[in-house]
Length: 400
Ligand code: FEO
Image (cartoon, rainbow, N blue to C red; front, top):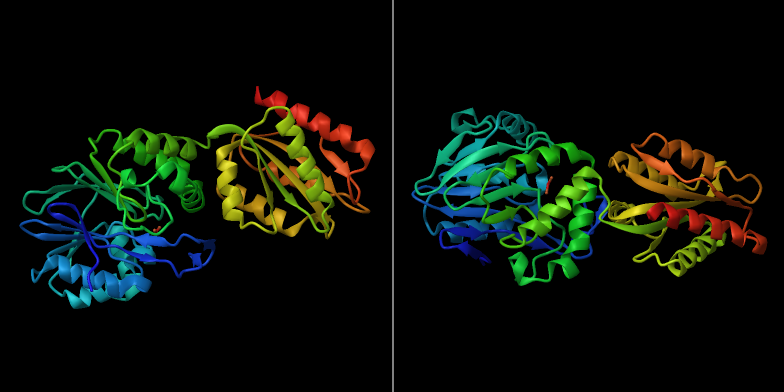
């Protein structure tokens, strides 16, 4: 049973949703599911842009057969080889043995790695700036290495000004019938997932995203068709502004995120008191996370949003509490930079987490650690409340 949508008269959306998958890449919780997008251009020649994840392969092939309506599949353009888009490629090459694969040389290598297939007799290798005409449509290819894998390219339809953007401008979240960004309240319903998707999937590769944005700036764009989430056909400035900030590690707003690693609640209590003191001083949109209770992908995404970060950790095995240590490594791995940080440490007999947090943060780029780390043993004592006041004052002063 097909389930397709036309995004314009001669381009069909063939994608499908997965609302069962618990962990994207076997790591990231996706409670709102995910869509795997693919697009079919019906021109003098038929052109498919990417395939789909194995979990939705049957739906994808039903959609493709319906879209082709008995016509042959002449070409498939492979923009990205990650299996969430290419797991069905091996099957596609068998079901449609006449189809020519359009890809770059790195992609060809990966096709062989993933599928053990030699397709040299049915491949058209393209490189930066090459063009291909399917009839009315003329496509040009723009290499986008590390957005999100080294072989990634995006395809620009010069005829209708459509950018097939691969993972760029994608988001987690299944499509609930509404296919276009202006069919939904994106800022309210989708931005958090879009931010979490971007920061966790390509957050590390800011310079490479900047390079792609630079190339895209020279293109007239009427529509962006990503491989996940809504098709974007309006408010381009909104999306470009988010991508500009995220890819340059510039905070979206002056706000404070507090992450704590707490074993019996003493550190959690201190974090909550600090949050109140910050709010009393006028700080808006404060976020507080328990690093053991919330998956690091959510905390990392909010760290990209906020200008100021507070890390409060119990001491564990004479070091940083495990879930906090994991979070800090994730922040470093994703290249988070340009933040102001305050620290709190707890330890019933030998507080030592703060020193090690400071050392780890010191290996990251442009992290300004405020003086006045708050140290307590087991729980914050009443006479130490003034230390939290001083820390809150220092944080607020650094926000001005
Ligand atoms: Fe959606 Fe990098 O794959």
